[in-house]
Amino acid sequence: MQKTSLGLTISAVIISATFVASSAQAEGGRFHKQNANGGITAGSANAGTGPNGTKFQRASGVVTDGAGNGVASSGGQVQTANGGLASRRGKTTRTADGAVQHDSSASASGAKGNITSQGSATKTADGTITQSRTTQASDANGNSYNGATSYSKDTGVTHTGTCTDASGNSIPCKK
Image 1: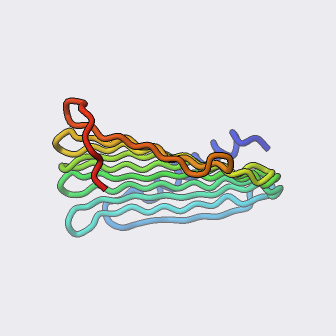
Image 2: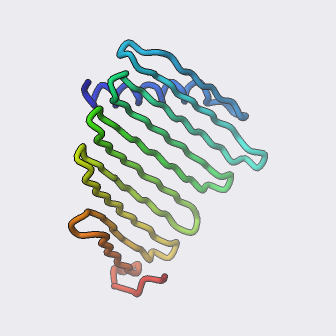
């Protein structure tokens, strides 16, 4: 089995599930079935609008092949009535040899600033684990933070972070 075909299949599952659940009030749907590869294809989605006008949508799906390979993915988004926006997505792939790859990201923006973060974690078939995440944030005044954290057995956890003002001058990072 190729990872690409599982990845495309899971994307189609989530897109299909999102269309099932894209309505104005709270609605959703879910499905599961045996697939042609001897595994399971499943997904769910829901969307809605809260009483204060906040809108949300989310979807998730999983595809396996019956031979130990699988992909799971999920995502969601919220938009507030006053213009704030937040989203998150994640995807995990597992192969029959036990290797696992996880990728995820999140972002939020609003009147007080914005933030984005992307990360990944890998476990190889022999059990070696590595991880990394980057984060960028800025406030309404133009001050910003850029950080990166990583992990490997050889180096342990490492972190770097810098903060700058709106002119690009280095400033202390608040803890």
